[in-house]
Every structure is written in C-alpha cells, then in structure tokens.
Length: 96
Image (cartoon, rainbow, N blue to C red; front, top):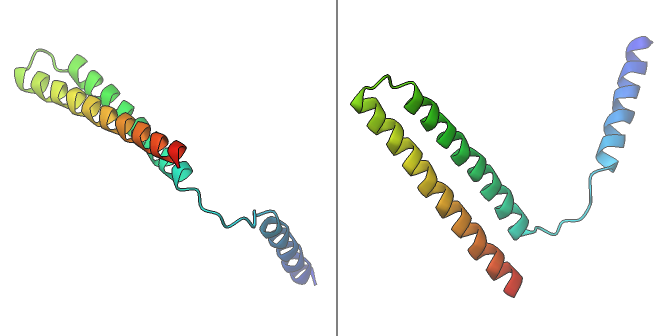
C-alpha cells in the first residue's frame, strides 16, 4: 500500500506544479530575442576572457599571440553585432 501512497503523492505534486504554469499563450518576440541577445553577450564575454587568458599564457610565442588577439577581436566584433541587433530590435519593437 505504500507504493500506492507514493504514486498518489507524486500525482498530486505534479498536478500542483502544472496548475502553477501560466496559461497566457501570448508570445513576446522582443522578450525572446532579448534573452537570445543576453545569452550571446555572455558567450562573447566568455570568449573575450578566454582570449585574454590565452594571451597571458602565450609565453612569447608569436603564433599564439596572434591567435589570442584574433579571438579577442572576433569576440569584440560579435559583441558589437549583438548590441547593434538588440538596439535595432528594441527600436522596432518600441515603434510598433
């Protein structure tokens, strides 16, 4: 009988969790894109840190210095593109 009680408790816990899910089905595209931009920004900053650590650890090797510099430069370009895309999206969403 303990097994049935465990299943009953699990069913009531799942039902309680499902009841708390918002029933609003409106999809906010601007909010979803802002989330994507935030995740992209975090990744870009991570690559900047990764490039900086590689730059510090190059030990004077010109090839590694160039690669670390390119990593930082490309991450900065990506971050600029993300910021520009976010600005354009928010401008268009605000105008609508």
